[in-house]
Image (tube, rainbow, N blue to C red; front, side):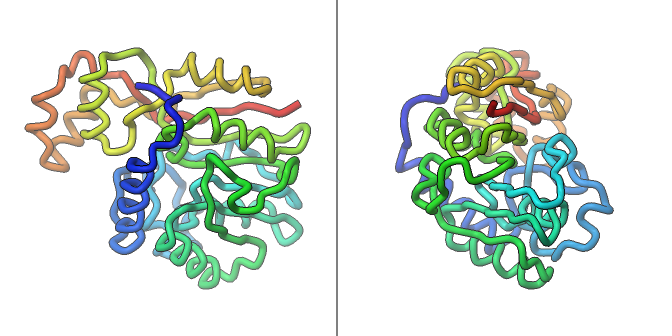
Length: 267
């Protein structure tokens, strides 16, 4: 598990291709949305927004979005979290989704149009460099994200950019995959391959330290879904990954990662 090697262009291209395929086929590495969002939340969303999205937790309750707020969604994908946020902030609010994948942007824009959302926009850009999407300093009240920051090979850059674009008093409330303990490199690699979206995650204490170093306060990491041995076995059975599971040190891999809500504030 690691975080700080700078942007890996090869890895970035692999992620772009993976999520481009997700947009085209509506399949991904995460879990069923029925396990994350309530039926009432997704009932009136375009079906393709739900099908194309796979998060690791629901950041919306913790974000407590208010009418009129401006919200930035990092790695907005097919748009589910941006559209939920747009509904919460209302006509006087605004939501901007940033994604680097053309197919996802096309899908998100189509979903927004289908759902009649006039207060949301999707732009192409990199979450490590929000200037690539013309996001100005201190221009948003809330930054959200769902199972995306863990994919970046330059997490400090992502968190610095989130801090830059937040207004004083702004909130950072993201769902992310977080390491719960330190494990050996080989187990981390195999676990990353097995789950598909946890390679290079930040361990909770490192995540907290990095946020504080950047300038955030009130850091709180709340575990939503712990990847226990039982959950890993269930995934292996569901996906036909028994051989991959057998190749891992299950005692080492169990309880090593979790879907969490990460909360912080810019004073």
